[in-house]
Length: 229
View 1: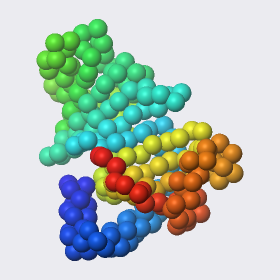
View 2: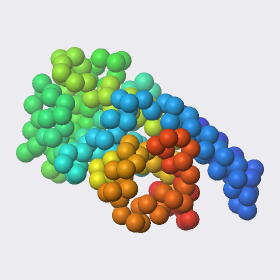
View 3: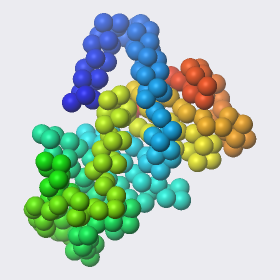
């Protein structure tokens, strides 16, 4: 809901300022970037070394491992019920050990449904693409007694949704994190500027030079052309 509110506000601003004068949109994005920077503490920045994000109707999170996706997980919350749509469920089970048997020979995708903060239902998608209910009233604490994926992924989604972020990606080579705030605005966190200059190619350095440093370690730039969502 908060994401929808942010999109509506951006639409109103776009109408009010007109296509020929994007100054108000740029100003609004700049203010959003400042608020986002204030919100991003060290624990969240560290988390985005491991999690890439994109929005396609719901939140999608890619867990990184050795520069590749370890598993992908969709997340949504509606009517006080949270859903996790898990691809690569075997690897998900490595990250979030679950006492329920994950059988990838029968089900290539799992959906975990959390209601009333404690009750978990599990649905498996079989090799014919059919949803098979596997568990109805499981206990969250019994299923995930080591790490709670709803808490960890839900916290990340709550943050990105509150700012209407479209994409988050981490580049290990330059130790930087990119936050796509609109179809033309990208906020980049550079942990170590010297390392970035030494590791990044000329193109990346030239791209950042088109933006401005709005705070130490933070660069906000506007792309020449909008990118497709």
